[in-house]
Image (cartoon, rainbow, N blue to C red; front, side):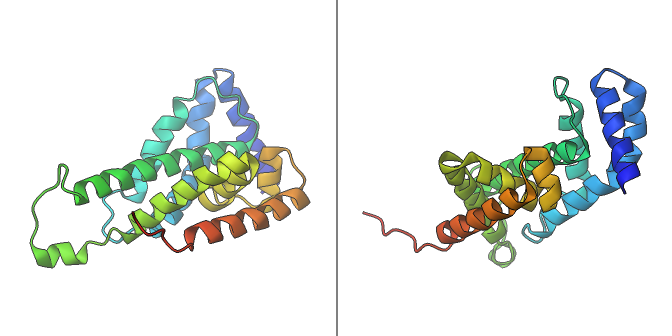
Length: 193
């Protein structure tokens, strides 16, 4: 794995320096991992989500190759940015779905069909995004760790490498961030007015 990881890192650096052939050699090496990452994201989404794994990979890939000023540090850095891109794509998709559900730009469906369409995973994803945004205002490092671990699928060690922290620090911050998010996501809703 280290040889492949080192090879991916070398190709990323070469690509960052303008070598287009490196990008062509890189794609087959990272494609399956991007698909796995996308599959994990979509697995948590609502059934019948209109975005498919391949489409999510391609949309994220297009965002990634447009990163002209990024100086790729290594494989873990690349997948961290890929996870961030996929998160943004899914959040945008969830927001659009919620807007359609509220009657903006939606198509008319029968009550039987409407009963089968659940927005709960969209709501959960949006709630998680809001909780992460709240966490970022308190502790941006913890928010980034959650993003890398949850959305990026990075290990503790890979997260430590990307963030230039020790593994012990990442473990400690991961536990604290999860506790914060648990409290926020499981809090009783505040009564209105």
